[in-house]
Image 1: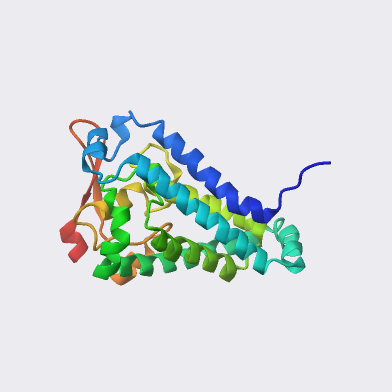
Image 2: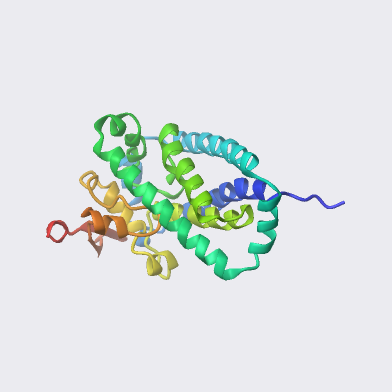
Length: 260
């Protein structure tokens, strides 16, 4: 008798597996200095938290997220949802519409939450500053956050994108895996040739690296997909990608243009 795993369980655990697999690929590129946005030495010297602590924090968050995801799937699951999972999975236009809706909802939620956590001194000092201990971002630190911030950003944002888009649990497997890959890529610290995320998204590893600069906390709040809200709200910081003499690249903010 074949073991059948529900879409809800897959939607819960596949993105977690994807997170570690995709970030592991980037960590294997650790010595590729010619493609790094910061040197390996900067990563060791400037970051204010150890990689061991980052791993523990991410695993704790993923455990909490998994428990809450299973709970949400359970309390909202019904026969109609199961039927929708089977019918909608074969309808590309429906899935495309749901993906786009979920992307816009998640972007909207995370932009305003992210900006508020920066502008409110209490929230920044006690919660969001945890994430910015990684001055030089790297792949598996993508969701290194205070657990309460992770709840506000990722769990509530994910739930809203899931419910408001009307996607089925089966579709959510692919959407949240895609969102996970995008978030990891934005924090990877590399600028690799041919990277599709750099080609199709202005919101990418260099764009988010500017935000992690010590002077970039007032700009580039948009995540994880588009830069739309930064442009609308006047928090868009353009940058130039320059080659470093010692190898690799540097995302240099264009401050004068950002203020115009």
